Image 1 (cartoon, rainbow, N blue to C red):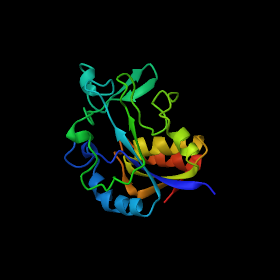
Image 2: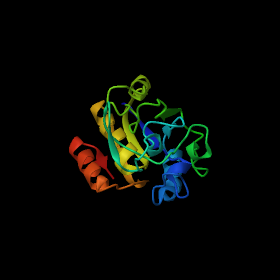
Image 3: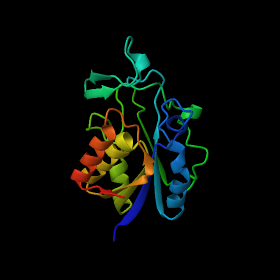
Image 4: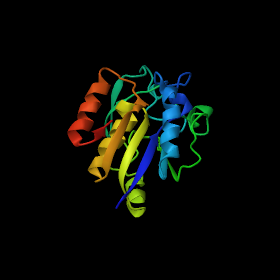
Length: 199
């Protein structure tokens, strides 16, 4: 029987209250995520890891504001405040996260010209992170996703996990959303339609 893995998505300081791109209540999920980590054999983490001046930052596009959308060579891209700059305190995992059990940390968004929401693919939907191969080689067939934010990195990761053939669950109680212009309802609908189990 295939093993299960817990994937903790981007539970970093910049996505928690006080951070550069804070998700409301982002820190509230830490105790529940820690409990899930304690009770799961295989634990993996993702970490947003941007170079300074990343193309997804509004500050890299004069005259543009955070949360506007622009067209990039790979498609539409939401512009964000500068966040999770590699090596910064904001890019560190939340100080309360008991992450030392993690077998693997997938860093994403480190290519200057392309953003990455999903744990499996860059936003061009073509460039893999290597996570699917890692899971398959470890004999893992099912994944549960938790973390930040429900409607971006968690949802994109869940949709790609299903496409890659993994039985996929999202623990909504262990996620928090940005909800940009109705994005939460949109992405919950997409996950449900794709066959993601939502708890």
